Structure formats: C-alpha cells, structure tokens
Length: 79
Image 1 (cartoon, rainbow, N blue to C red):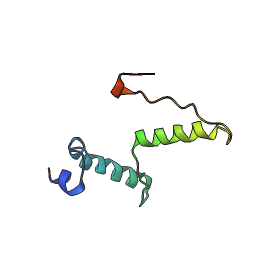
Image 2: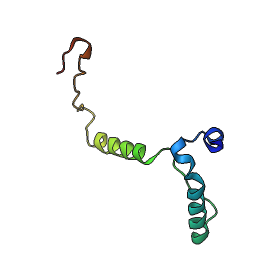
Image 3: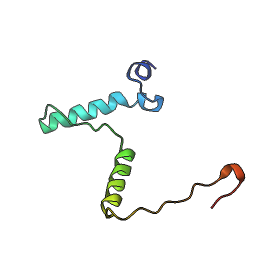
C-alpha cells in the first residue's frame, strides 16, 4: 500500500520488494561488493531489444525487412 504509492510499484510487486532486497544484499555481502549495476529495463524488454538488434544487424543497408500490411479492421478487410 505505502510501497505502491511511494515507490510507484505495481501492486503485485509491492509484497516481494523487501524480500528481494534482502536477497540482493545477502548476495552482495557474500560477494564482498559494495555496488551493483541495475538495468533500466525489465527482462522481457531486454530480450526484445536483443532480438531486435540481432535481427537488424543481419540485414545489409540495402535490404529492408519484410513489411506486413496493416489490417483494415474498420472495413472488415484483413490481408
């Protein structure tokens, strides 16, 4: 409740944030490190970015990815 409002967390994550913090701190103590790099994006976003970069790195500058037509839902036409 307060964590959701103060930290702008999703309600489904508010209950796990404190235990997760303890896990991270324990791992840092075990590894004798005082800092940790935290990504700005989530796992799904990172995977999508990696796949995007992998796919487009294989395309030469003169090649274009296949462009799919946008369905004309308004008129009931789906290509």
